[in-house]
Length: 386
Image (cartoon, rainbow, N blue to C red; front, side):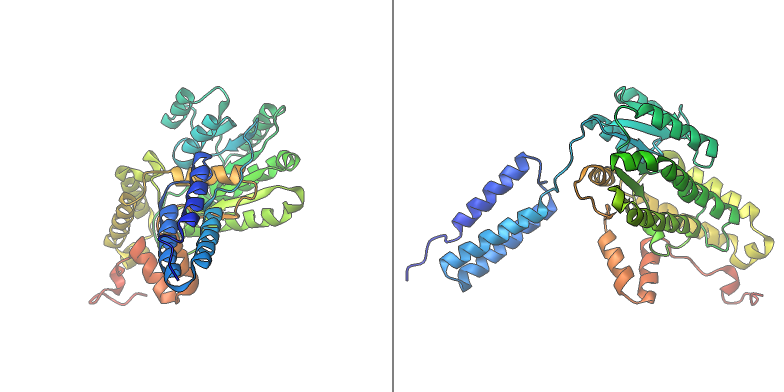
């Protein structure tokens, strides 16, 4: 029986035509997932031509290509229309970039900042449309939150409030939980949990009315025990559990809740990326440590922690677009995901956390983030700790 010169050519034409149509409609992104799918289809083509009759090979390849493009296609999105969204923490990082992007898409954006004269606030005021409104808010101050609620109600009377993006976050200590002041745990909970809780509860009547969206930026540090981020991680863990509770309770109202767990990104010049800021935080921590703890751990131990932390920040990704894209998808996708994991290596990290033994999980986190050295009292030749 004479074989066709290229039995799967028809299937490739069909797959290519659909891929081109999806690219033109912006339903498909030209990137690694698409290239990987095409490579797998080529391997399947080679296998089918050797194992199957021509018509069967054509049918299998066409079906596989169609399914692959369906899986890679961007889920259908709702129109922006006149939707309004409130974003917290827009002085820098994810909040600032999301506010700029959503404003450019046509949203009415209510952007909260700590300081109306901060560089981020001035940038938003200069580059965004009049549809973006800035509002000063400190999540540790109930009066600021109450003012933000009234401000939001006043500015969404005609459009309604479609979305809330809980982005603001706080952390100012990198140290073992024993070395971290209790006040730091309280500060992290005030901003990352209680402030977000009060704001979200206050806006729920508007969000229930619009059957809108709640999008919250969490952290992998709330899912797994990152070394030296105990205060920050516990507050984010509480926040994510709260959002899962809202997700269940608000389902009958049509409100959809998503949590974004980003990887390591450069999110702010002042609070994250400047060495002098973290040097001041280290010196303040050392100055306030009880003498017993300072003797047991040693100043070298704290120096080592901060050195490793600053090294990990230098490896952080400068491009924030994966997180911004996740926020947009959570706001506009017809069926948004409950979890988004933008960032490099997060899939491997969560696989290790969920499926490998505890000792391997601990070693991986130490290698990935901070690997503490031995405290002074545990080093050979030192007096036994009391």
